[in-house]
Length: 415
Image (cartoon, rainbow, N blue to C red; front, side, top):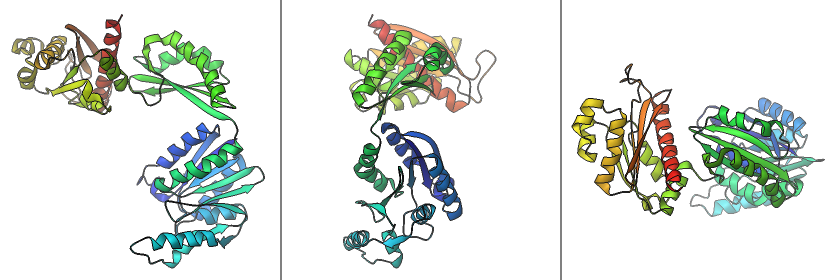
């Protein structure tokens, strides 16, 4: 079945709020096996909203609208959707009583006349109770198609969808859509795509979709089948083949796992403690690590040594190294990592130093030149990088590649 999403509200168009509803509903539609080809955002204007609904109705079997079900004059979704299907509105006594009961539970229980607008529903529709607000959801069916109206606040939309709409759509759409996310680090998108072009060109079911990330490429393998078990059975050979081609470059196949969480897992499994010492990244590396719940079991210290004085005072980088080679050098990166080991007693240290820009670069040491040092059980390695982009991109690239470097060394040590 095909589906289409329509998000209603000028506040979305103006960028006043982030449209998290569309992201949520897109994921849910994918999980239901619905083919979602279009998503539209439209303001609170009857003429434009009517046009959008009619267009969606022509090309989709399931049209889902969110927002515009409130009590004010600019809440036009229900009225416009009913108009699109040629249906009049009537006062639903059940919805009216629920609104009345909800106001009784409030400290200020005065009901203004416009609140009863929310109890007006299209004829021949299914009314979906809203247990978290006053605006009910609406389902309008016609032949094999349906329009679903959901309230805009996520705190109302999400539970309504989970409890009522998802089961309703599941009955209509027996097929399921399952995905596995194969996450690859240390390779560019074009390189990865080239290596799997034969799989992409020959795909039917499952399909493979690449997504470029900073320093990573994620491959979503998706299959449609009558059950989750059948879909997973279709996915498994493709994932196995990706492992054959990319090997250790694949760091996880779990949607919620990140590069930093997987790296911390490796350290935890081996009983290793980690410390970081950062110059140009200014704490970004440490921040990314502590975003992982339970990181404190592994990550013990994080030094920010932005100045030469800090490098000397906190991790004992020799003054002669800084004078002879400069702060941005492989020698300093090595000294930072080894100094962090001495200062903390950790078994693993990761250092970053470089020129993030926009100023400070030279012909010899241009903006984007970064050195990452990694000391694991007394063995120190340094890698040079040359990144392109603005200051933020260079710093983010430095963090991602430092994590990739650390993971590579940890995997090498285990062999």
